[in-house]
Length: 243
Image (cartoon, rainbow, N blue to C red):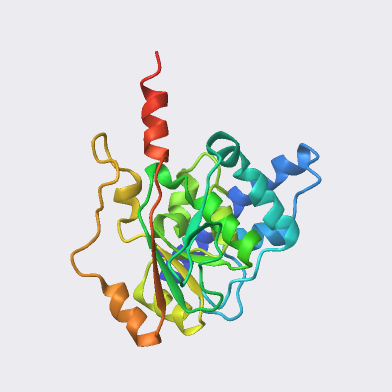
């Protein structure tokens, strides 16, 4: 009996994933979707490479205007239903509407609290691009980059938008690389546990006792920008309690 090598197993897994993606692409073509873009699919599924070794930081390509507009439309429902307002603090201490108080140059680390299901992410990331021309590189859960996980999802492209906007799987190395490139990094220390908090845990932090990001920020002289989000959990409570 022939035992498949690790390379054969990896290739088989890759082919299975690609077949799933091609089925999705075929369905879109059959529906005569004029917006189907193979390059976008390759970028969104993290198959684009600059070298043989996968590197989520250096392999990243900026979203095109068309890709960005599609992502804006994808998250428009959040804007319509919640009408988010963003405030920032200027150097002189004044609080202003908008993001004028955010530094223009990196490296910088935005540290925040995850609302329920992380629905604040879309408006936050998109607003930084449209108002300040700043792309936030999110540190994301590895689940969003796992091929096996994608095959379990109803839509294998569920996380493509986040990857197109520059999200990378959480790791010290990726964090280091982003700061070395003077990027604006979006970090939620509470992670998925915070985004999936239970009833009665609204606005509760699930941060680790040791804040390693402070040490990394000091190494690169990165600006730490703490931020908070309010309202989403309260809105969800109202909807849940409707009779």
